[in-house]
Image (cartoon, rainbow, N blue to C red):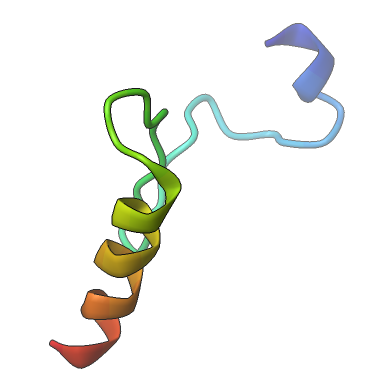
Length: 41
């Protein structure tokens, strides 16, 4: 994390608008469909 300090001065990565995590048990089509469905709601 030290290498990010020069680019990002806050102590945590957080945004109330976005959530990012790894996707290991889903395929790309399922993730894409989930993201597209977020626009509908």
